[in-house]
Image 1: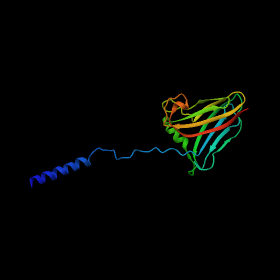
Image 2: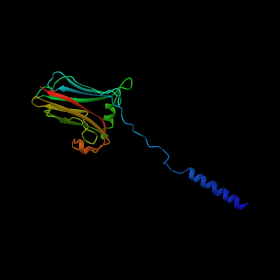
Image 3: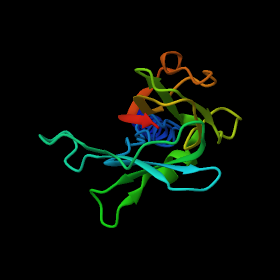
Image 4: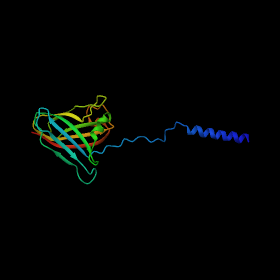
Length: 186
C-alpha cells in the first residue's frame, strides 16, 4: 500500500510539472498576410505649378484572365521637376482599402524602386524614408531633361535588404507590385 501511494504521488507530481511547463511551441506564429493591391496611382505634380500627370495601373481581377488597365494622362514637360506620390489600393473591398498606409507603417520592411529605360530622359530621387533613414519611396522627385520617350517602372518590394542604395537587384525580398508605364517628355 505504501508503494501504491508513492507511485500515485509520483505520477500526480509528474502531471503537475508537465502541465505547468513553459513550452510555447504549440502557439502558432502570427502570419503577416501579403497585401492585395489592385490599383497603383502615381501622381506627378509640377513643382512650379501646372497640370498634374497621373500614371495608373488597375487590375481588378488579379490573376484573372483580364490584363491590367494601364493609363498615362499626358506627356511630361521637358526640363521640369515634379513632386511624385504613390497610392496603392485594394479595390476588392468596399470601400477600397488604402494599402499605402500599411506600407508606410511597415516602412522598414518595404521600399519602392524606380527604373528608367528605353531612352527616357528622367531622373528620380527618393523624398521619404523609413524610421532608420533608409529609402521608402512612396514620395519622390522626378526631374525631366530634353524631349524623349521610354519606360518608367515602379516596383514595391517587401522583406528586403536595407540599405541597398536604391538598387533593385541588390535588395532581394519579394515584389508586391510592379508596373511599367510608357512615358513621353515633350
